[in-house]
Length: 316
Image 1: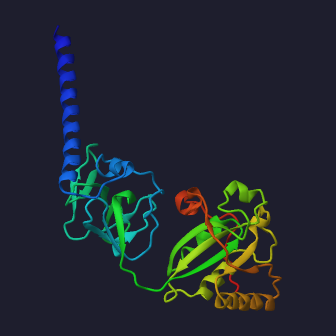
Image 2 (image 1 turned 30 degrees about the horizontal axis):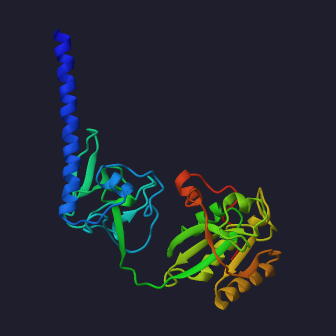
Image 3 (image 1 turned 60 degrees about the vertical axis):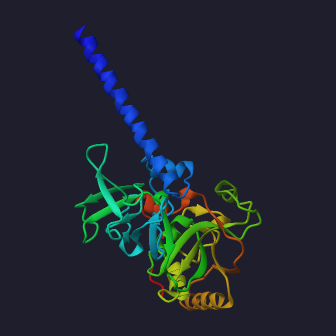
């Protein structure tokens, strides 16, 4: 009888806890409605209201480099500045500071971590960690991209370049590290099939090249500087291959968007030829660029590996 009473008490406590959790969740949703906050999608609500977590390396802002302010997705309160953002390699956006007192810290339900929420609406953001030594402030606010909404303050000019030099993982690895490069996207260009898949391109029947689209600030880094690094991080003498990767999709090719880019690329090729290189790199006017599948984006950042067929060789 004594054991029965203990079991009954435990069941009662669990039910009370469950009801309380449901009440809190309902209350949060009710508060959202009463305060006329932004209506969330099911996935946004899973993270922001129900304290879920998006998968690492999948968030929109993980490697995002634009200048501006990150606001709460639910209530639009400014939370983080791009100047405080850094790459921790964790797979989630990281910030070492907050804006004002707009982010609150509360003990996490797991009993060990510290949760961070929007101080205005209570929306779940992620967690804060200290003592890791990533920055001088020694603080990492690890945030779900889906909890944020970005507003740009960057009025600087932008330009676009597209380069193909074998496997786009290695091409992106080197070009995205240049200061002044805002964004890089591996993808497919130069073929006749609309929005091809990786498998289609690998068949060699679509005519596409694996390439990387680079968005950059020309006031910080010039097209010529990017093109030089491009030539110095692959073998431009190889035809329809790069290292162990063989096929027309692995060709060396520059897709220019204007006459200036074409002239700069052509002048660099002439300089290399003057040094005795038989350059196979083609120059082609840019056509539609199809962004590759998510698992190809920032591949070496995600995996922590190094390029297997792209290495730096001083040529200029």
